[in-house]
Amino acid sequence: MQDSAGRAYGLDAVTAWPRLYPVLGEEARSLVDDRRDTLDGAVRMAATMTVTAIASVVLLAYSTWWILLALIPLGIAVLAYNAAVQAALAYAESVHVAFDLHRADLLTALRMELPTRQDTERALNEQWCDLWRQGIPLPATLEYSADNSGKPAQQTSQADHNP
Image 1: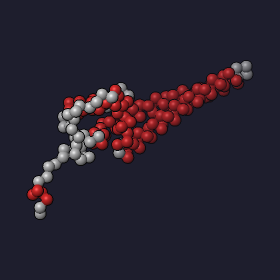
Image 2: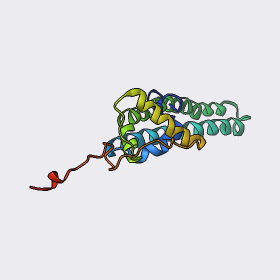
Image 3: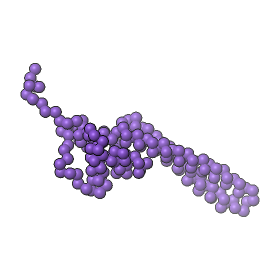
Image 4: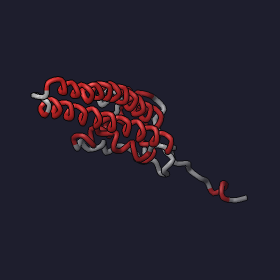
């Protein structure tokens, strides 16, 4: 997920995600959070059951057939590991979707005019990621949007103000 999310748009997920997350819509943030919580829980369960299985083997090493009880936490650890892999895939998918649907919201929050061409969007995103990742300054010619909508500022004439 870290390598591929946002790549098609010139975004580096590792550097862009902390900036994209705050501008996600409520539904997208809820989905990402739920899937991350599921992943965290499954990983914790797998790790806990693995340690429990090892501790059980050590404690029951000289207890004849009682050592078979260590298979219970070991089996749970295997199931939790498989659940963690599935949860990681679901989390990765939700992060990919967040980049697909909300990358324009990030540019709007940065007061950038929304690009109309893919190559322009990619170049702009790469410039921002270079700044965030390596501190490479943005080009001096980069123009900000006058308002916070991501649209170019509209020039108003005197006639627009008169009824």
